[in-house]
Image (tube, rainbow, N blue to C red; front, side, top):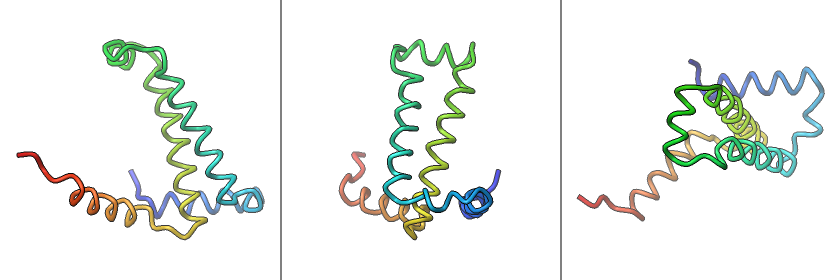
Length: 106
């Protein structure tokens, strides 16, 4: 499967090999992330909830969602790397804050 650090390193190498670092500014990466998120949403936009489960089981929707989710993840990992943010640490810190904000109900 791999880890976030390995993915971040591979993305750095991928961008460097293509001289794309000049384009990988926080603003550009955030805009690209937003666009890819829109593409992910578009795959589900006109389905009813019950239809999504059936389409995932019967057709190519799962593969399309996997591609779009991967694009979202890749841009998010690259954005946080460029900004010097440890994504996993930030996620754990956010969950910690949410545990205080939203205590268990039972």
